[in-house]
Length: 463
Image 1 (tube, rainbow, N blue to C red):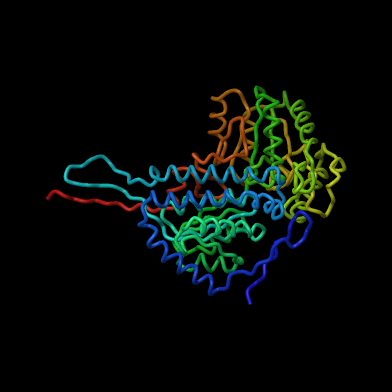
Image 2 (image 1 turned 180 degrees about the vertical axis):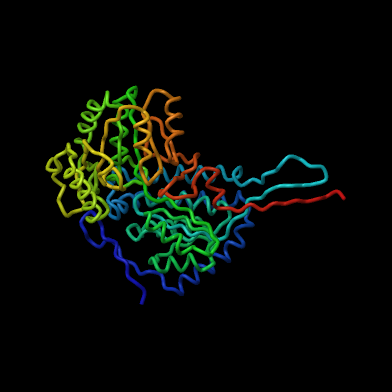
């Protein structure tokens, strides 16, 4: 008998959904069906692929009224923000559809008499997308739509915490009329996913999740000669220079720190502020953070929902306690947020000062509503601290000086450099990281390169 999976809601700890993992026979059938469907799909004209993928996007958006409360129940995001994820889903999907003709066009070197030469981008085959729960539509669409547009079949394994999202993708694909077997949603346990990766029947794995999960992906793929794209952890820094617009920086960095209850791989987790303005910055930051309303995510008044599970909240509480024991000061009283209950998934936001990199909260990914703020003497110290991390997804620089932002950005080991914004993905730019954040890229023209292989044509037509 196959394993039963229970989705425990962070809203009230109830069982929100329960499903059975796919059987080994069902997985084998899905892999065979994907291979068969892809053989035909790769010959489908790009304009036809675009029309079907567009219909898939439209079908997903038509389910908005059901999706928003489902998100709240599954992973705790307040309903007032639920539609925002679908707007991002639409932006990324439509952009990747629009740029496909250019991104997938043959590359032609300089003309050479008597020869026709070009490089064609060919689909890989079947792409396994393993998506996380924290931004379940956004992270999945980064790979699903471009993989299909590039001529691949797709198997989606979504996180068990957001298993209904995988079902929504499948419904949208069916409603759009995609060929049978081309897109499939499979609920699998870790062992089954590892066997699929090593089966020889998938040619690319795109995984978003933890560092430990990424290591498991590489172990499963070892020796099988398939591509593995990894978007893993983050400990994203911000540097606020003395010439920054403080009001703008505070407004955006508070949101970047606490949106989605801090459960964002590119959320702000540590802030370095020029010592000349640090006191004023911290005061404004704390005042704005106090305005959050922690509570039931199904209520429109709630601006901060629960973490995904009580154990996640306890980890963050432990980081805070450890920091305080080492001399940090916590500037917010959790009692000011009545919904905060020790042992529950509901956790008040927190600001820590007098922190240093000997504390877990400034070194290890928190994935929760806490941020540490440190004063810095100069640009060199800020760069050194930003680079003092095992991760490198994004870094944001707050300044009125464009040249300074570029200079500092060049010196920071990161996948994306922001100036005067944070916690955002631009689908026209590659989404990538360095160090333990992973490897590979999604979005932009670069994202298509990881979903295709080059094939060179060297045709001599004059003898």
